[in-house]
Length: 458
Image (cartoon, rainbow, N blue to C red; front, side):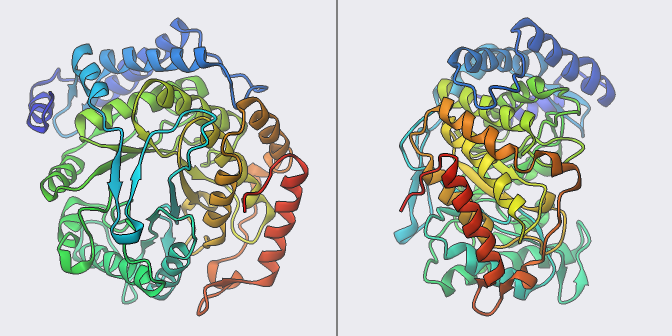
């Protein structure tokens, strides 16, 4: 068994390599070779493939790629490598069930398979999107907790404390992380669901010291929550992130990693992105001792994963993981358009259908590329959950037809996606209810999707 101390030893004694050499001569080169060796090819007609052989090839390519490549520690300039047997052992001992939450909201996250009728885990919220004020943060949390299908919440990130802009690794970040925890739990209490787990740790806590400061029980975080750590692209780690892992392990809570092998970046095309995304699951389990995973491969120019090639990537890596491991993978949906547009709902539908019918769960939704303050509402994650439940048991071939029809409605607009309206512009914040104009858009899109084959669950 590979322990955390073993990982640290590898980080301190592994082969020394310059960062650029690791990125281009090791990571990118090895990835291209594995894609070619296994003849993995993106098919624009089969965006939700039904070929288990393709999923197996992607898995095998990822396994060999990770063993040959390893991760890279930027603080020591050394490669962290694992043997074939060490990776296989990690696969064997991956948990098949992890419990989160408390009271009535305590539930088990379990693996799913392609075309599975088992209910998905709905990890709903803002996906770390930036929010401008504590009042808006609290209202959003009430809205997310009010969604019946919410199994866990992905919180927004505060950008200021008492009107002061948060600076990374400053006392303001520490205060913001603490406020993040307090407000998140308060929002859940207000709607009578205090036991819902927070599973993206704290979006405001960028540094390990901020996370550690907010872990005090009086602020509301619990061992039954989930704690997310981001991996640097490509397959890089640093001491600050390892410090987070060490702190969370000592706290006794489950760890998640999120990662984004970009199409158009070091991973190359969609084929490389799919293989690398699977490989990151091995990295997360071995290096960070993660028990669940939040992949979000993105398009390097469009900063979303709703383009046709990313729909394919999300389907393929989810099938590769779900058919060959017990890893608990929760693909994160990133859309280009903003709230109060029909496009944000079309994108959400297409990017939810792909991983759900491929055997995954969902984290939803990163709206408007997740970079504009207050441009997200509870309606987008609510819609995502409704889509997820409506396609349970759907054949991948049928899902492929539906996804291609949905893409016709928005794919030509991704480059110049509409920003839409801020939360406070299309919601009644006091009542946390969408404006009639947004409800009208929502109902219209649902009717359109019914016409192309979505049977809405009751």
